[in-house]
Image (cartoon, rainbow, N blue to C red):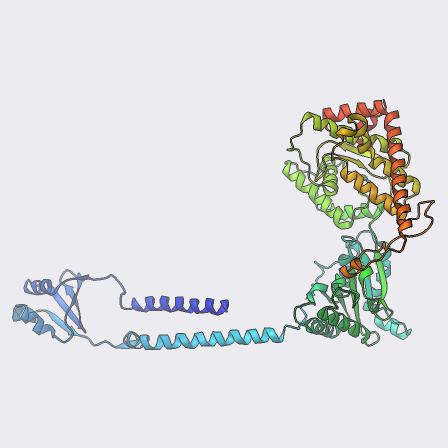
Length: 606
């Protein structure tokens, strides 16, 4: 309706402009002076008039000095009668050349017919455009079920290949067979082998699932049709299924081709598990995907690649053989992979000569590929803000902390007492971490707030760790409680602040996992308590039942409290024994606010 109104106003504007244009057709050249009849008669009497042209009720007067004038007269009165009535001498009138012109030509007809023809043409054009718009609405309605799949360009300049994907060696090796099949399917068909119809890429967000799917298409040099799972689902039932049919029909026409469905969990969730019944549109879309994948002709040349970071919620029918036959897990990169990823993202950034990509990789355990790209981008932005021509190590290390904890809050005003309390709190974490054998090395201690934290102690491992032992859990618990313990030591129970709240939360979550998930309690034994899978649907959360008795729940509470008390006692023992080192670190923190790893080691070597 808004488009119709816009078109109507547009045509009205055009009509007004045309009317103004046509109104000025007869006003070409220099506009003559308009005079009265009396002045004309006086000029005739004085023999100043050379020529008079009569056209309707308008007199165009040409004087002897070539000046032009315009005189209006009554329409039914002749020029001769007019001049005589005003007392002009007849002999003087005869000396003037008088020419009578009738209106003719295209301007005459246009002037007469335009008031009738233009409105008619205007309404015809308006009706035409309104009809056309209605037809467009109908065509869009008919194409509502068409898949809006986008196809990546196949030009060599923008093509993504496995060379552009750093790390993920196992995933690339698994997908090389898919590339080989798309390149030469006859070799597999002659052997009677059936290539997997679907490949499911699973991994944490930012690990490069979409990038690897593009690389497969780039390596095979085939069309890459990609859609998000959310693009299938609409308000109207049946639209998603129609789009699935259209997508697969298009892929079969362009075979060999790759169909990539990103975030497939949007339509592939387990059916019949939601609160209040199923979602008809989503389930119909999923059913159509299942039918299309199972209905392929053998070796049809179309492979479906899907990506998700929630494989636990997918419907079992999607994961059975014949549909997504292969599941490729893309893990977070290890230190070597991180080094390769950083090298890729550092190609277009001028790094200083003292910047070590290996050192950055060591300082970023747990970072995904997207995190590493963001890290270098933040470092480049920081270097520009500081007016530097190169990205130095200082900017990169600061960006690591920004990605982990948030931006630094230098403008926050803290009283001297708050600064001292924060220094003791962070020193408590750092001293316990430094003098317990299973804690990660302390990289940095600061009393300048970042994000929601008033200060922070940054500790990171020297190498990637896949498994965590009971001894490390216990030492980490003591480190988490170091800030809480030192506040009690220095200020007493009555002056404990809200600062350790996040530490207590993390410690409680960690020890709960130890007891209930990892079987790290001698009293409770090797058993998993409670439903430790992620709660996917609201209905599961409402109707969840404990798989243990109230007596066992009491034992769990006692074990959690016991382990936390042990960690508290361990932290207190370390801080009491290392009180001089703690005081030395507090002094340095109050003076410099931020202590790097080397300076920290010197401070605690008292």
